[in-house]
Image (tube, rainbow over all chains, first blue to last red):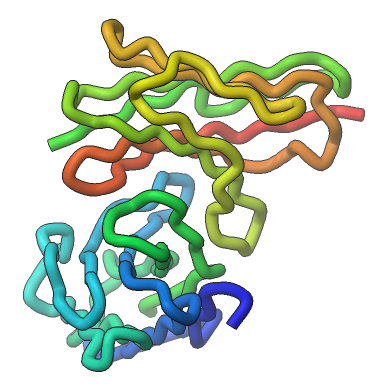
Length: 114
Length: 109
């Protein structure tokens, strides 16, 4: 596709509910990143894939957060037993080569936990 | 890990004036410094970047400067226009891309 596509754009979850957020990167992009952006703050790194390999997951805040990219293209970020502090915009970015050069971000998924 | 500080958090300028946003970073190994513009409801969009082997880069009305010794870099926007109004983020690449806290730029017509 022409850009990074994320779905859904908005998600409201009841506390304790599980959610799954999807990212479709630009076709052929090797690297994929997930970031969490709280209101009024800069994006914070969650995890990084190169093709299907998850090379860095040091930013995942707890074991309730899980990400996968099984075929090296589409990625899913799953949050189990959501809590209010998980409310944020979740951004996905992809880049053609390994590493962070030339990131293209999607528009994000705004998650609200009530 | 890397820590990026960004100032000011808000900046209001008159149309046609210049705007300057400054960032400092902590990790001397960082070697890539992009700037992003984020409009409401959208993801950050890369507007310009600079690598550690150069001190300045310009693209039309936008320029970035980098001082590796002092570990700071700046974004300069000249002849600001209302459509420049947005939140701007600096970032530094060490092991991963670390973002500053953002600057809300308001350009008044």
